[in-house]
Length: 504
Image (cartoon, rainbow, N blue to C red; front, top):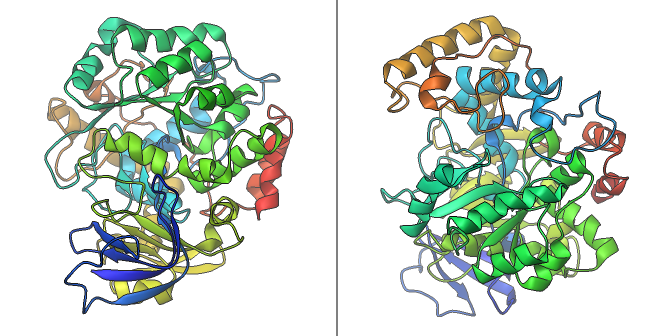
């Protein structure tokens, strides 16, 4: 247990911000109190008291990503001169397989453990404590680094959430999800991604099978209209806004003005490396750029999209609150250097350099050496651009250097990596699709893969080991000039995303 002192931005419903506050973090991984708002709990007399040196906020929650692909660079199809209008189009682009699905499949099969640690590191350096986007393949243990929303069990044996990434096109395909929702499980589903109004039928299908309930998190919704947002509100469902990816692929994003006016609970998601931001800390900057011209949201509204709003969506199915600093909530929190008088503007303006500490489940996992050493003595050094930080992967044998080295082995010799993966996949096939062998850790594709039949399940994927392919250099952890140059070169967003450079 420990006590963290600083300006506490609680994200409670009343918006309490406590200058000179204290967050009491218990050994049970929960927040015991925030002083002076709550009574000081017993048993903390000998607990370390840490001066945060900044703002203390709930950890950031990224409710839309595809982790397997987050080591890859931004992708623009050279033959495409106008934006796509539907998510059904770009998966068949000439360079999609060679640039995205094949390299990701090889890394996920040959170095799945290292790949997951790499992309979770990319998230945590931006203050992310929970992330969605690992619905297939091997499941990491709870609190291994960042919470994996798809598989997090919170110390129980329960499976809280179902995920659909490839859009179901029939009531029959949605029946298992409807059954799960009826039993109180969560359902995270891509729906109506693109500018074509015909895509609204995907959301209507969700209505038809009865899953538009508090447990539903609808991703994208770029084709939805006022009637659809009214239905989302009536069901107390949530929607995830990924404006960077929407603008990058389709030149348009969701009608969040109408959604907000309808009272829909909005969250933010970074999507994936090929058409998304480094982490959700940068996605809120895209939302901020959009909001500068539209004036729909307050700064507090934007910060709630990556803290209390997704926290409330998860609390519909998780047994513990998250996304707020309050007694009994999960002790997932971050410390951010103050860059502005207003604490919400400080977070929006923050970059990776401003993330001082990340605590998940009451355990310090990443941050400045001065803050990590008293809280996580087993943490190891990591360089984040020019920054010196420390990180705790939960295993002293695992370091940032070893994670990168495992991935670079695949890049250096894809043939050997593919042969090794083939052996793993053969073992997986021999298991008759019942699970990943204990000595294996693979990530399986959850996005269109032209080199595979899209309806392949675990057994089919196991029978089709990845081929040796060229894997691009790993993307840096920090957002820098090269990435900004690539953003500038894409015409679909009409220059709006070029404004991201101003946050550095």
